[in-house]
Image (cartoon, rainbow over all chains, first blue to last red):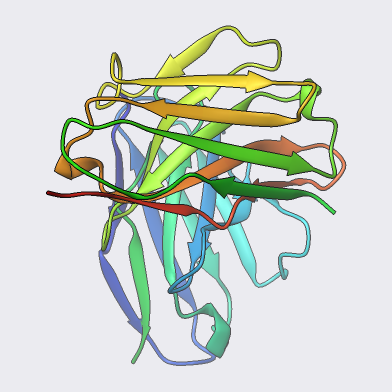
Length: 107
Length: 119
């Protein structure tokens, strides 16, 4: 099974600042990586697929990069609605696996 | 508009069984594989199972292999999860999840259905 490791577990950021979240795969997954955002009481919502392609309706302040085993989600200027938990997920192989998440909180 | 609506969650005793259903609309269901994902309280999502558009192949997470069975009815645009030998650690919100839908360029999740395994 491919293990997805996210860091940091918690990121304290002020509104308007940049946030950089990391995700590492235990083996190469090419670009078969998705990022999800989850707010309390809601299902996760897709932000990025193919490591760098924004899903429908996702603002340009969200960007994804990386390939192979190292991936990054960048939020260029945090808005109040961006404070949430973010998960990465690989879809290169079965079983599909998620990281344990990064909580982005208000500093 | 794509919609996924789960049902069937309930309180069940350890060792019991439950069948979850997911009714879909707004996309060509028979063209896409479908997934079940769960999320235990305070935890991250856990992918459980996938069924291909035609019914096979099927894949399971190790944690549910041999206990859970995924199935689908393309005529009813629905996917199901039969859960047997339930354990306390199966307590979670269960989501029906589409793959990336070409027309909408996103993945769709249902609202979830709560399964509680407790005596």
